[in-house]
Amino acid sequence: MNIAVPRMPGPGREGQPGANATGGPTRGQISIRNVTKIYDPEGVNVMAVDNCSMEIAAGEVCMIVGPSGCGKTTLLNAIAGFHSITSGEIYLDGELLCGPGKPKAEQGADRIVVFQHGALFPWMTLAENVAYGPMVQGKLRKREAIEKAFHMLAEAGLGDFGGKYPGEVSSGMARRTEIVRALINNPKVLLLDEPYRAMDALTKSIMHESLLEVYDRTKVTIFFITHDLDEAIFLGDRVHVVTTRPCKLKKTVDVTLSRPRNYQALSSEEFRLLVEEINGAVHEEAIKAFQSGEREMA
Ligand SMILES: Nc1ncnc2c1ncn2[C@@H]1O[C@H](COP(=O)(O)OP(=O)(O)O)[C@@H](O)[C@H]1O
Ligand SMILES: [Mg+2]
Image (cartoon, rainbow, N blue to C red; front, side, top):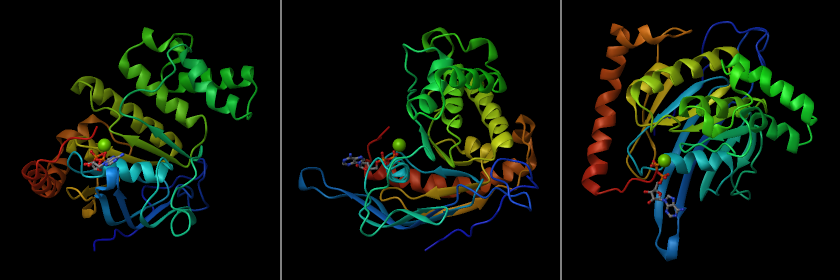
């Protein structure tokens, strides 16, 4: 079994939200221990995750790469509390999210999911969408929440768009708004399930830079699922390659590129070597998935 060793990524971060005396982030550490998930549709067992273990450090950008239908979303959904696990344990900052006697994690604002298909309310403006969470939770009054939303949208370069509706802005702006909507809750962890999958390469690269900027500012732990190897390396502190179904850890690679990162990193020799290091493992699993006729589960 290949269990990655937790580490505190990145340089000094004193003064950042959740930073400790040595400057490292202190919140959002996830332990996935021997997790198995078996679906049982109509009595037919489907093992999606098999004895999978991973350690994700506080403030780490953890990238999960694996073939379609291998069980990545299943793992993310278990962390989010969208469904139960069959066995194993998942901890967040040392507290049991799910495990023996508690098969399903409670959903909470400490773990926020950004889905592949956008989820903004079309009848609300971008600012209203962002303000919605703290308002319904009773954490902020409407006026304060809207003010904060405008402020956070401005930080994300969307200052002029808070009054627009999702249908009036580009898909890239809508995605960025979703990240802002997640961040207003001050989550410990962002769970991103192929958020940029349907985007063209140029929009995607702008999304990447914008997410990196958000990360540099917040140091929130990010659990990010992708098919895209370049995306995994460009964004990640570590890349976990997982096997074809059932999902378990196949290989972990530390991304040695320095932060803050910009697009020039993509053409560096270091980047090319990382692609080479990871590509073999990804390709091997993609072929296995193809040969088994695994159907894509978006
Ligand atoms: N609700 C479900 N009921 C039964 N089987 C499911 C369900 N969701 C997913 N699966 C099965 O689990 C496997 C993993 O799915 P998923 O986690 O969505 O994969 P990925 O995100 O890696 O594409 C799928 O191949 C599918 O067979
Ligand atoms: Mg998926």
